[in-house]
Image 1 (cartoon, helix red, strand yellow):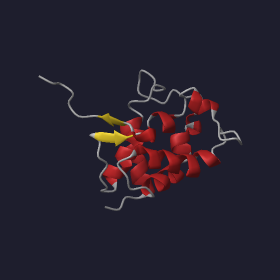
Image 2: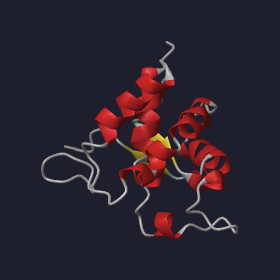
Image 3: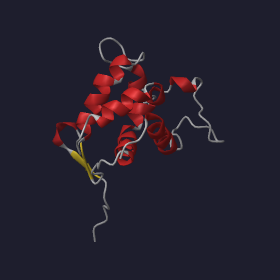
Length: 132
């Protein structure tokens, strides 16, 4: 399934912006500078980075984002640290799993949401957790 960059951005906006903690009560972007949102300011790089990965492990997606997006973001320091990311104020970093899921779904790739691998080999199970 081939989606244009504009179509992918629209899909991601519908899924992410409604959940964003910066959204105002009337549903508008509450950022002082909405164009400063790293997720959409660098969306072409975000989409390409995500599409370059095929994994059920989130680690390769994080690596691709750090290598191809964070490295060109003006918020990241030359040493690779990012105060915005550290303060959980980067929408790309905060909503990365949802962004990956939206892009993978829109492009017809599958991302096993039941078991998401994390760095170090641990996993998070997202299925029902009720045991009788």
